[in-house]
Length: 65
Image (cartoon, rainbow, N blue to C red):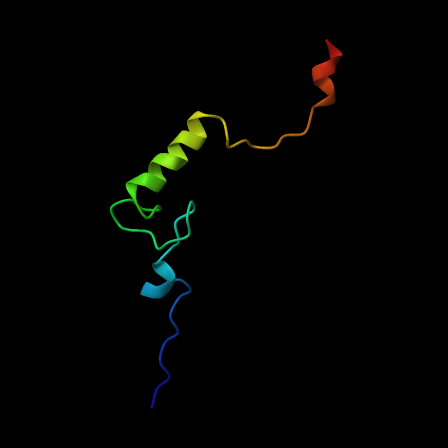
């Protein structure tokens, strides 16, 4: 009997089901990657109010002026 081909990582339905980055509930197709419009709006508010920041190191050349 031939061996079954191995599935690629992430090809199953269970692994395709991501969690909402805001509350951790399963994401819905309509609001993906969020679980609801509420969580989508919470994320948008965080971006608009500068709650999310990308850390950066201070560059020594900035002080050269």
